[in-house]
Image (tube, rainbow, N blue to C red):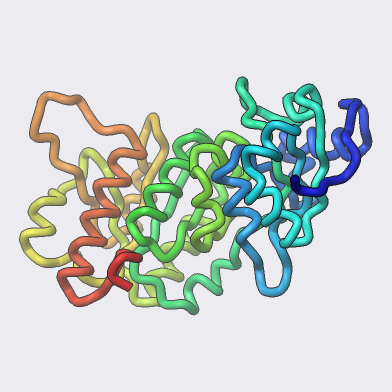
Length: 286
């Protein structure tokens, strides 16, 4: 049995109230803390460190979850997090999901300065420009992680990286790759171009076809994909900043692809082209 602190009976406990407030963006920004829910996210949070600083600060767990996920609770304690055995009522009060899984972690912010991302000479980057839906943002982050991207950049017009829906949708990928937030689109494009990265805007009305670009062998170098708003895509001024505007071909009768699906197709196309050009984008080949 994992040793934890005293059970927090009341949802009005000061610690519970502080954790519950992190569901709101202004409190997250003030405290530079966010919530991670469920076994996968909490497991990755417990493993993550920034330098010598552990990312996971606190963990609230029900008795049932503490027994089922004893390894995660143990990892949280090993990381120095305060572990609180809480009632189901307390965990439900902190959770932002309809059906809580019994584990809610309080984590330190993870964002990386944009300059650090550039200094690492990235080869594959996803830039989210004007993306407003947190679920889409988290899913694109997960796609970038799966494709082996080196970083994700959220522009200053995009959704909060630490929105609970974004954290849930990433399924732990928040803790796997560098993410810069609040970067103006022009700064993102200029910085990546100066770092030797080709900028491709993903747009259904693009004048270049993804299949044709792959066939021509133009996608093997360092690449950043710019993805736009779910409803109206990329504004003309943003498309004009890119080196090329590329569309994912629709071979069937579908009207279009949603943001996350298009992002997955584009990122995996670049990852495959880069492997063919001599780079490795897969952890199984590293």
